[in-house]
Image (cartoon, rainbow, N blue to C red; front, top):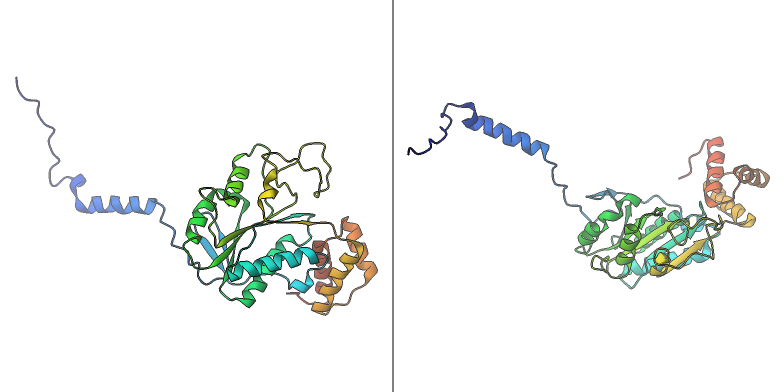
Length: 290
């Protein structure tokens, strides 16, 4: 019986065997493959934006001066002191800032970090993570744990859907020392409209500061934060104090009756509404507040 004949090899002159063709194919495949993200430099910028893969440095933290944040004196003192501790490398809390919209929760976080950086340059950096970036926090923590610097990872306006069980469990694990917990030089700051972060059951009050938050496995996230601060809607006097402080800072003339009418037409009094009024006054005066 004759041995089965082997398939003939392509001749040396075949296009398939051409080194130039093979090189071009390799180059094309390399261009199609995603390039590895360059390593982030965590040593110098005051703030970063984390996109899930790498970090974009931010050269300046935009935030109001601390004295301009009115009506939240107790919360301001607690956050500022906590950021000073973190910048100094001392024990510091993870923070949950929750409650009424527009009352300066995220502004206070940024302002407190900037104040701490003025006292200790390069000792502390702010890292903002989008609410869709929770799944990448383990990668971020692994990178930050190797850096000789302190970091505040900031998640603004966090919320979870009713059917999301993974997100809340991951957050609890990161806060309470799970396998992928945040390292010792990193703390979390989260803002949310509700203390429980996740949506409440139907039939509960619409007030975001609700004393009847359910205390079950899904809603007990607030207990994991060492510092949990509620922000209530501001009073008549606090609202006017906010406007007065901004107006004096930027040299703007204002009328109390007009300021109150501005809030009435918008159906709320808050730091955000006060700032919108200041923006209107600045525009009329041909100025641009910082």
